[in-house]
Length: 403
Image (cartoon, rainbow, N blue to C red; front, top):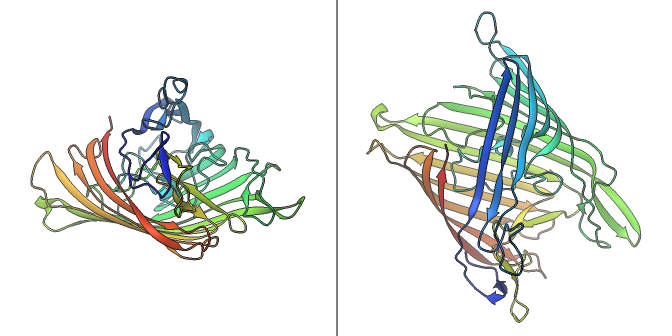
């Protein structure tokens, strides 16, 4: 990674850093205890690198070891109106499933419900998970949910209890996450499947089917919670703000060309409208090893150090990804180049941000065994003017094994 200016890694000033790590590791278990009742559990770790992700192994003998293992999902589900009629064995036009627990049946967009093992790109953009690691646990909240299909219309809705946040804003500062009043959150996502339908028994939606389906889906969704953020317009005077998020998207995957070549084009585009309160903004740095170099005297980025970048905030984000599965030339290896573009028009910044990814997948066994190589470019902002003063890049090589 090309570090933001003024970065130190493990106490040493570095302009570039090489790292290796485990981005995601998951163990899942589904118990279908009866034809209508199941339990789903997913456990694992995230973001363990040479310096980050450490649990009990972090201390005087070094950082990064023994990453924290936790539950991602833990929920029950009951089929009120199952997808398949138990007597006729035919598909019902309308089906309804309800459940409760720590779950991933999210609202807002397809990408907010993205599968992490069937992605088009080397990684997800993360802003698709609108409350990630603030009032949720790695994009999950606890509550009740319902999902199903009505002919070609798929739906999912939930009522959750967001995890508690208690950040205190500065006087005349930006809105911060503080939901002390403990209001519930409400979310939903609805999409219409024009061509082939997808398996919706799992909350996770594929980024690409590698040409195995002919897809055209158009969807829209929302997320809202009252009094989710807080500002301090005057000393000792606090004001609550509602969080309201809307998304609209389209996903298509079309086999193209001669059948024996097995080529396909995959495109996804989504527009988000975020409102977290006045000038709310968040940064992120995936597996970021960087901290401030106290001896650096040049211009530093407002985002912070390492590979930190502005993630999301009050404003609009438009994201598009496109991939092309090249003609088949082997029974064992397929190649799928892709490109993404993100436009972030955030109220707290004076200049629109443009983010780019360019990569390719080397598919050894579809999504079950693949290697992804990706270059990403991000803008960096000047703290004084809130405008872009330079760009930085990052190269990711990812190996995925999925059993």
